Image 1 (cartoon, one colour):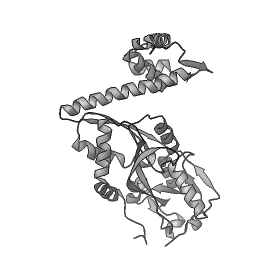
Image 2 (tube, helix red, strand yellow; image 1 turned 90 degrees about the vertical axis):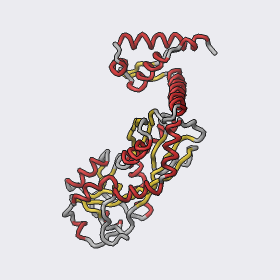
Image 3 (cartoon, helix red, strand yellow; image 1 turned 180 degrees about the vertical axis):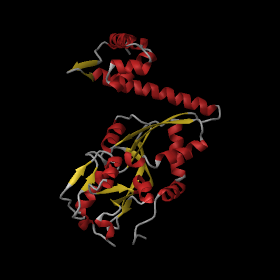
Image 4 (tube, helix red, strand yellow; image 1 turned 120 degrees about the vertical axis):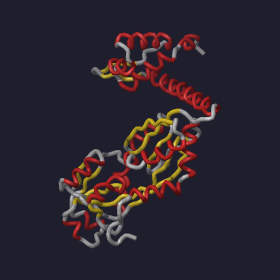
Length: 318
């Protein structure tokens, strides 16, 4: 090992990680409660120890060099091991403490707070860091090993992941109250194509699942409007822009209030499973291990909570 690397300090690595995450010296300084010159000095000293530049500026944008990417991976391992040590020491003292870093696809954000609340009732000294992403970003994060665990649908077959399906995600068709489609006693997916469909952005797992399913059922929407979140889709439906295919959990309040109506489409709901996932061979922290076992052991109760969160079914659904 290079002797210079033994002179690295944890503080330097903390500053380095802040710059990597924010892509800005000034924002990193604000996050670390330092001055910008202090951040610049720490990075210069780090570059001297590493022996290579860590950042490039191109068009006023900061980019990580190959050396920085390597150092970032190493620093993640170092801080991950320190966090694991802290949790293990707490465990030896008879209590589970630490932070659970979860990345979840946006379709799960309506349910996960309830799940974590049940977990923290049992382990009150565990805190949560939650990041909400679309499916494409979830795949990038699990590949980069940025989180303890991920909650996602449609597990990529080309990635070596351990995963645990734990809750059904029912995708339904909705329209605003008074929409012509709500007067129908029954609809086919093909009949629904008479109206514009409001869809999520490219990279959304819900959009991908719906596009594949509609193609399979030969239901082709001539007009689609792209809105980059479930909230925007709901507002678009309420504004009369069209209909949407959305997770029931995402619209349960609007369905209960009667401002949105679940349409009785014969081929729906489209059911997918939320899965808890992590890279195969990953060393899980004690908190992550405990959360995984909690979800594994409480799947029946979790599904009961999921059903309780759902609104009533539309006409004709058993």
